[in-house]
Image (cartoon, rainbow, N blue to C red; front, side, top):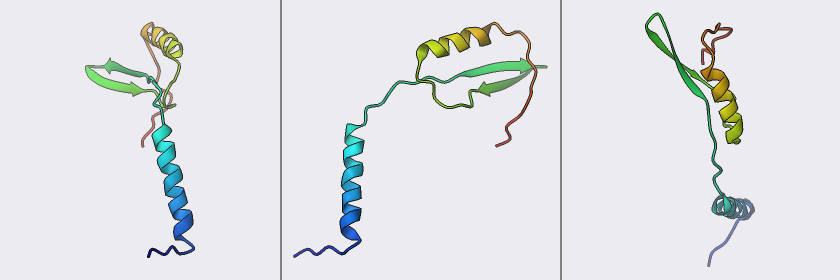
Length: 80
C-alpha cells in the first residue's frame, strides 16, 4: 500500500507537468554577436549583451554594420 500526504500529491502533479513540458520542448535556432578587436597589439572580445537573437536577418544587418566600423569609442565597461 502506498500513501500520499497533502504535500506529495501537488508535488507529484508539478513533476508530471514539468516532464510533459520538457517532452514537448522544441529547440529554436538562435544567433549572437561577438567581435574581436585589437588596440596596441592587445585583442579584445566584444559580446552582444542582450541575449539570443532569433531572427537571422537582424544578425546579418548587425554584422554588416559592425563589419564596416573602423574606429570606436568605449562608452561603458561591464565589470561582472
